[in-house]
Amino acid sequence: MKNLYTALIFALAGATLSAQNKDTQKADKLFEKYEYVDAAQEYLKLVDKGKADNYVYLQLADTYYNMFNTAEAARWYAKATEQKQDAEIYYRYAQMLKANGKYEESNKQMRTFAQMAPGDQRAKAFNENPNYVPRLLDKSKLYEVKPSDVSSDKSDFAAVLYDKSVWFASARNGARKDYGWNEEPYLDIYRADYNDDGTITNAGTVSELNSKWHDGPVTISADGNTMYFSSESFKEKESEKNKKLNAKFGQVYLFKATKQGDKWGDITPLPFNDKTYSCANPSLSRDGKTLYFSSNMPGSMGSTGATDIWKVSIGSDGSYGKPENLGKNINTEGAESFPYISDDGTVLFFASAGRPGLGGYDVFQADLQKNTEATNLGKPVNTEKDDFAFTFNKQRKTGFLSSNRNGNDDIFVVSPICGVQLLTVVTDAKTGNILANASVSIVDDRKNVIATEQSNAKGEVTYRVECNREYTIQASKDGYEGAGFPVKKQDGGDQRVEAKLQPIETIVKETEIVLNPIFFEFNKSNVTREGAFELDKLVQVMKSNPNLTILAKSHTDNRGSDAYNLALSDRRAKSTVQYVISKGIAKSRITGKGFGESEPKADCGENCTEEQHAQNRRSEFLIVK
Image (cartoon, rainbow, N blue to C red):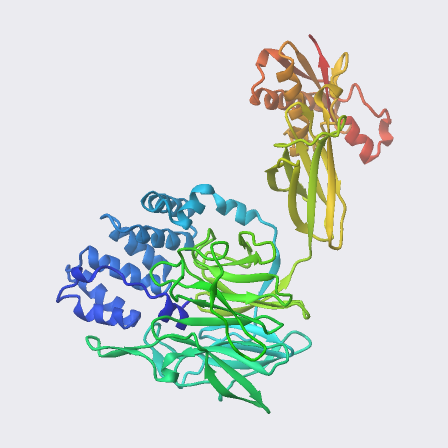
């Protein structure tokens, strides 16, 4: 995220002033003025001249961190952490490694951070679930993400759709002065037409709102007559002068504008703006009563000036209440920004760099009614880079996302994937008793295991799955026969699956252990996932009955020669035996033998159907002792 809000709100102090010297003065001055491109060049000159020390390495790391040049930031953090640093440095280093997909190395730095700052919410979240990344990657997709035709070769972000207009912030106006942070032009507010076919055309600046400083993004009331937008405090002639740097530093302020014919006018600053902190990225509820925004005002949880998500009430007379911090279910010691409140006012979307994510800023959502912890939207909304400014128009079932995943802040179109909430309840089939701590897997129609969870004290596991797709719930628990429960296709809504497990003794007969067929694929001898699920039942029986000895008989269909089928069935028998032994059963307790096509279950000769062939490719388990 290489824009105004990173520059003015999330600027980092870097190393202490005491480490500066006359060699670093020029670079330090550029750094303190947020002119990071030129600052990096000056620090690198010191490296080339052999005048760099740990202070320079850390300044270089922070410089690239602020520009989100993740590879260079990670490189210099590695150099800086050869000496002991403050805890926050290890956190930044971890984020940069994660942004480059180096999750194991990132976890190593996060462990150091967590040891140094055990009370930090980010450290606690990591310690509770240090290997969260694979789970995020396996998470069911909630949205499709596609490039938008409104993006340019400059920074474009924070698009929001109201009626038939798309509003966004952009630095595409190349005629204006470049901003020293990233050497791009200043930001302006843009409006474009949203057409019925989903295309976006006729993007142009909203001249009456834009100034010679940064402007945008915006939020607009349901009636289209009131707008709130971000701009700089210079608009109000408010700033703080730094005599040493011979520069003025402003804040990001929030402003209100009203529709006057075809133009916007009566632009006024909000009363809680202050030249000691910033307020930015507004989102207005559809009833017009609550304004959400990001700020580092006093009372923020964020460290190093990082922002939190706040809200303020708006009275019917246009008055404002006292801003309220949304608390720890939303905010962390890291940075949270770009809130967007859903049309019904129940779900808040926001970007966070402090919560467990895939790298950089990730988009999260929180149910404000339930007041529960925010959840990560997963891929493809989130990536290893910065993903932020998620907005969604419920009426048109489309929204926008901003991301620098392609190297520049761009706008992407998001469309929801139909989802079904799937509640599985595991019980004892005989008694009806709830079974807690049962293993419950959700398997898709391509036999991929999406996730595996333990049932809670109520015997419940909940998954969100795609609509119009078949799934299978596989449930198992020690002492019970594992079973699969099909989930039919459904357009939407909630589904409930009753996973009733039979006690294991029901499959133990006088002469054999009765399992569902252990089918093998045609011409293959490897144990399949379905086969393993059934064989686990045999393993449970043998562990519960330590004197039990089993003969595994393997059979083939009648395609191929007798000799080939006999050899194939013998390989299948051995694969079956090896699987059972691998689960802790002594080799002396199970043997296997192939019988080829000599004992068909479906005696259909040369006229077997595919189903009959499958029945004949099977294993049986006889009790020898």
